[in-house]
Image (cartoon, rainbow, N blue to C red; front, top):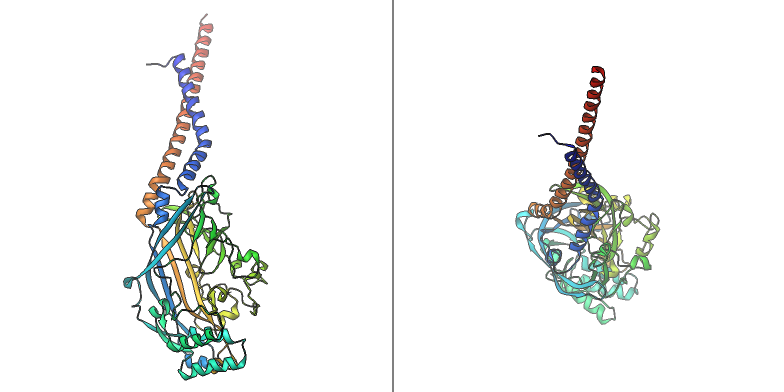
Length: 486
């Protein structure tokens, strides 16, 4: 059957329709997809809300302790030698509680309960493994009285000497992490409290004491309703939008999300802000590399060197330099005693990554590696979903020399690593497949349909044009033959 003139016109019209529709939808599709994502990403009674309340992605809390190899030499002022032991792995479980929506301003208030379960299969040994480390409560006391009258220092020294309390001690991993009793230290702290020192130190001391089966305060965040770019942003933490720990307004600001959720439509050029209650401050992330997680393309962001740089390298960090603190040549460190009850704790990246060389070289055993010890977040750019996150942090203690406390007088003035941690989560293959089926597959099918429509329309138009050209040539040839025959 030969397609006549009317058939050709109809084919051309249909081809133009398919081509035009495909081109229009090619430009409209992104808007449609973005609108759908914006609607789904908003915190309300939907899948996003359910996954936010109880995170389905496994979270691991891993600890590496620093075992002091030469405590006797360090007491005489020599350089500490350290050996890393770990990981000791805990499964971290999170669940939002006391969730209240505030429709008048598009926010939700909540607390997040956390508890930890030790996983022996993913650990190098049991929690009862022991190691040698600094007596942190003793250093807390030394830090408190170092600027007080000599008679008070001598009183504290007498109490410590009477109990034969040593500046270094052997602890189990469990004791250091979750807490232990130190009777003489508790008695000394009691004396200081009676003398009027406003101490807030628990009788049960541990780096993370009080954090198991607990939460880190009240959060009030934006739901993203009406403005997807605000999704997850912390409006208030513990009812305030600033913290009281630092010395400049900008350093005290609560910026960004809690590090588990991010706004959709993330770009490579974005600076991602996160508020960390562990660090008592906000930090930021910049683009690092393109990665994939179970076949899903992601943007990897990391904390740049400037985040923990000294104020001479980054003037914006001046507020993190506390009074009575020597901040010169201390790049890569964050002294957090103002938010850790006066304890001379110093935070850094593991192995003093990106810290001043003098800090790292003051101890033996540091081998920093950006891939192993950096902090990263892998974000799927369309939805803002964090498919992989690794928060790596080292907790150190500042060794102090206090004139009238004999046990500290010969200590080298160094920042001594105690432990480092990796709090990480990575999307499982099952969750990644579900993510792809809900987002990537429909988007891909839509784009395939658009391009098929454009292709079919173009093919139909080209076919009609070719048929018309061929028909025209035949008509010309017939007319030419007829003329010659006459």
